[in-house]
Length: 271
Image (cartoon, rainbow, N blue to C red; front, side, top):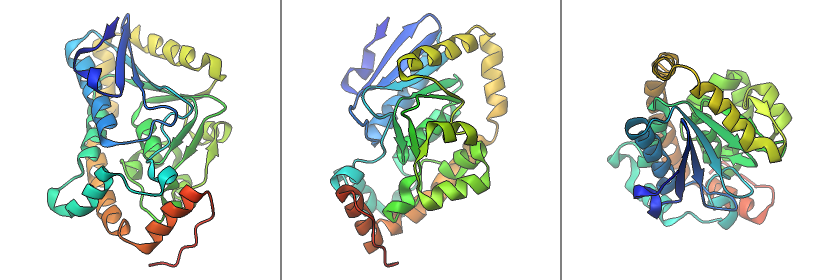
C-alpha cells in the first residue's frame, strides 16, 4: 500500500509490502542532498518504527544517481539554505541537517540502501547511515569534499572508517577520488554488486530475509550493535561543522566549487 499522509508535500514516498517498506527519494536525476530531503527520510524512518508493522526498510532513489551530494558541484553556488548556514555560524549549535543524520542512525529498523549510481559527498554520508548497501556496477562512491576545498560532513568521520578502516578512509577523504563498484565491494563500502535491472529486487530480497527473523530480536540486535555509535556520530558532526564553517568562507572553497561546476581541475592556494 502507498502511505501518503504527511509525506505528500515532500520528495519522499513510502510503500509497504508485507513487513518491508520502500522509502524512495524523488529528486531526479541526481537527487541532490538538502535539509528537507534528509528530514523527510528521518521522519519516514521514525513513522515506520512507531506506527506500522514494518520490520525492514529499503532506501532507493529515482533517477541516474543515488544522491550526488550538494547541487553546488553543478551550479558553482551555495543554495539559500547553505548561505543561511554560513551566516548562522556556531551560535545556533549543531546544524539541523546533521540532527537528521543522527535520527537515521538511532532508528531501530534495519535499512538496506540500493545504490544505482553516484553516492557523492553528503550522498555518501546518507548511504553509509544504512546497515547494508547493494550496488549496481554503475555505482560510484566519493567523499569529494577536499576536492572542493571543504571538510567532510554527515558523520563520515565515524561511518567511513568503521566500514573501510582508518587508513583507507584517510585515502578516500584526502584524495576525494571516485571509487567504482568493484573496488567499493573490496573496500567494504558496499556489501554486494548486482546488475542494475536486478538491483531493487536483490535489495528487497535481503530486506525480506531480515524481516523473516524475529522482529523484537532484530531491533534488539541492532540496538546492541549500534550502541555508542549515535553518540560518536553526534560528537563527529559537531567537529565536522566547526571545520566546515570557516572553510566555507575561504578562497579555496570558492575555487573548489567553481572548478567542480566548470568540470576543471581546481587551483588551490591555501587561503
